[in-house]
Structure formats: structure tokens, C-alpha cells
Length: 407
Image (cartoon, rainbow, N blue to C red; front, side, top):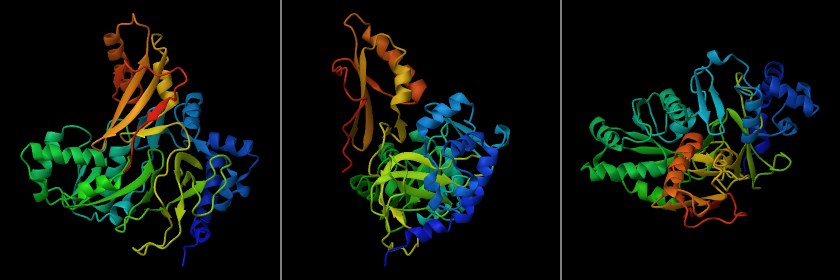
């Protein structure tokens, strides 16, 4: 018998009612959104009613924070009362309230087999991005000890894995592949490590890469979320879709109207987080998915997202981060020498490569411009690129040419 989607969402009704009332009273920007939609708190008293609230997307957050810095009128506490503040390309400032496991990843790690006493290498980035601290909070809530590895220093990380007896890994799947290969180059034997499980996120995990990683002798499971919202779904031992969390309203909606779609229909993942400190209500992730109501073999009663089915807008995820046309365009438009440009994304050996194709006049000093472009892109939107002047794009070429295959 299929699961009851309406009954699943109905469990959130009391929390939705309280959240809407609180946010309307304490978050000025959300109060304006309600007013513009001709709504009062009494109109939104259930998860079903959330569909009446307009969707807010990442580009909206950029504009809101620029108009009303630093948090666009959505923060309900003083910035100094937060635990951490992060910066994402845009720029967007992401607040972390001072509560345990704010990002709500503990259930995901428990489902992946993490237990108190595990020693975990965290290979997500810690510098300005929320990923490193976000996932550390989750495994700490389970009771694990954490090595804050971040990205880079693979020699040291491999040594720590070998010496300390690490039992769990969290990070990008492509980074884990590179780390294992680096460890072998250094003379370690990862197959003799007590590593039991790896939990990965922020980029696709194609079956071929999962099989390759599990060939080293441990289980690989994945989760789905965003920097703004935290946990939006996670795999269990059955690895058959992402179980919806029971502490946030995750809906699949029509990208044009915001209407909640029936199970099985493909639409945008739209999220409402029950944070009293930051009114992130009806946040559109831009990701496409669908809800699966078939009972899972694991016995958990929650519906599942079938997986990542693409993007609504123009942004593309590369190496675990979104490449946003608006943010990248602001950087490149500062270069008068650039007549047209295009980002090309390729993938080789389960690793993303990003190339900037540029059209310039013949007299331009290409070596100097290449260096300045790479530096500006690295500083402005956090990506490392190679610059290609030999294959200039047409003036009407799409902003991003994504040539990757996820087989």
C-alpha cells in the first residue's frame, strides 16, 4: 500500500501555524511578502496552505540582502546572537542560529550507520562555506569525533586516515576517490583501513562512481540538501531515493505557479524550515525531483524524493557549488576586453573541469588577461577555471555548456 502524502504533511500543521505567525511578526521581509500576497497569518495554518505563500529563490535572496543588508529582513535575532555566519557566491550571507544541529543532519548520519564513538574525516570545506561546519554539527550530534580535514592537504589526510583508524568519511564523492588514490600513491593500503562507511553530498553520485568507491571495501550513501536549508533528504541502507526529513516541509511544486504537485510528477523542490531565527519559508531550491510514495524496504514511514532530476533555472552545480549566471556575469562584465564568454563543464574520471571560453580582440595580451580572469573568478565566485582563447563562443552562445554525463 502506498504512503499517504497528505497525512505526512499534516503532521507539520501546528508547526506551520506557529512559524507563519512568528515570522510575520518578527521578520519584516516576510511580513511584506505576506502583505503583497494579500495574506494574513490566519490564512496559512497548515502545510497545505503553504502553497499560497510565494516562493523565494536564491536570486531573490541576493537582491533582498543587497537592499536590506545583511540578511534581507528575514533574520529575527541580532547577528551577534548567531553561532556562525557564512558567505556564498552572490554574495549571500547564510546565518547559523545558536542551536544544536541547526542543519538537522543527525537522522541522515544515523541512517548511514554512523554511531557514537566513530572517528570521522570531514572533507567538506570550512572556509566561509557552511558545508564543513554543517556536517560536523550533524555527526557530532550522533556522538562521533571529527577530523576537520576540509578540502586539500591530501597527504596529511591520508596519513591521518592510516594512523588514527578513521571509521567514517563525509565529503564529495569525487574527493574521496582522489583521496584514496593519493593514499595508495603514498604507500598506504586503504583496503586495510577500518573505514566502514562514507557519506557523500553536494554533487551527483552516478552508479559507476558508487561501485568504484565501494570496491575499496566500505558502504557509500548520500544525502541531499542546500547551504540555506540543510537536510532535505537522505538515503537509507536500501539506497532507493532520499527519505524526506520529519523536521522540515519539503514539497515538489510547479516551478511556474508554486502549486504542490501530486506524487510522481516532476517539479521544483520547495522547502519550509522551522527556524524561529531565520524566516526561510517556501524557499525554491531550483532542483527538480519527484516524490515516491512506495514503501521503502527499510520500513521508514516517510515518502522519498526519487533523486536529482535537473535544474529549473540557469545555475549549474560544479564541484559541489552552484555556478550562477548572475554572479559570474557581474565578475566578467568588469573586463572590457572580453567580447563574449561561455563556461564549459566537462567531467573526466569522476572529476568536474570548468573552462572559460573567451572571445577577445587579437591585440589583447592573452597571458595577462588569463591570469586576471582566473584570479577574479576565484575571488568572486570561488571557482578555479582554465581559460580558452582558441575556441571563442558565439555572441549568442548559452551561458553554460554542460557536457557532463552521469552514467
